Image (cartoon, rainbow, N blue to C red; front, top):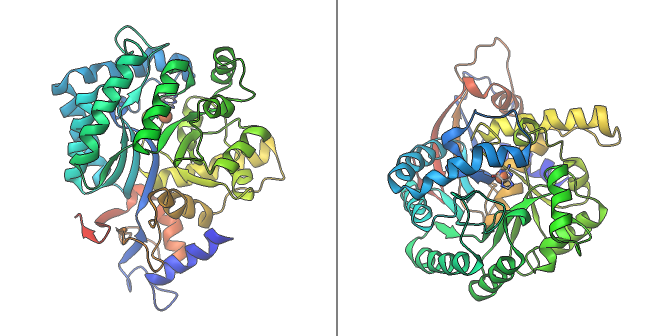
Length: 394
Ligand code: GUN
Ligand code: FE
């Protein structure tokens, strides 16, 4: 219910008389969007190599690409493109995975700070099941590098903040997880990771942490599953009842990444169920398993995925409505940043101004219709201005 009320309030803020025609009112003013899960380094190979499932895809495509970020010249080129495209999108805030490389992660943070975007950025922790070119030597090295990166980044920026980023349980030894917990306690940093994305991944986690009763419980055993600090888990395609209870109890945010889940044949996350359970849910592009930074596309795909789930999996779970995915892309994810993601009083002014006047139609449309159409016809609209926390970005 909340998202429907918020949706209409948001539209009212940008309107006085309904209905308008596209000629009478040229622009749509909407709250900025939050990308709750994106891998900055993977932007360099988006649109490629989608014929594998998660674990093979990581080994064949992702780890080799991320290993290039040891080379700062390559990292600079790749991150400049990523940050420039993110700045020009409808996204105003984002939670970003970098790589395990400290220097390249700081370089990414420098660029993000200059862009005006508000972000959390994580130097990735991974000390097992990587490749010789992409794996930290041991948990001590990972811990020392992570602390060095935290100390540098905590002081250096206003709008770019560090977030602890154990890649996922298969990448992090028990010792490393305990050390990340130590850092969480010492610096009170939020946490981001992946959860229950793929069936083989879930089986692997059970092998690696045999005492865990579900994947989420493996994080919980190390104290890295919400409660003390804000925590985002990407995907949650296969979260069972117990895992859902754990997430609810600890206030974990779910980053729903519909395009990624389809591209890697992972499955469809039961978002309707999560909304019924009043859980925190936002949207993630999950580049490069997702191909696009455009959250308007993610919104449309979230609706489409929910329709397939409804039709083929569970007819008691009604498909997501436009107002609901609008909520997920704005306040749903934005609330991870505090008072962000809506035009309601007391919130940061994050706004994106869209020009839909190039879409040709003889029909008169009200604002909600125009916004729904802008989502589906996103290639035909232009993003003309952006404000973040009241600051003019372009
Ligand atoms: N799980 C662990 N690492 C990754 C990643 O880079 N992308 C996705 N989609 N899932 C992951
Ligand atoms: Fe991911």
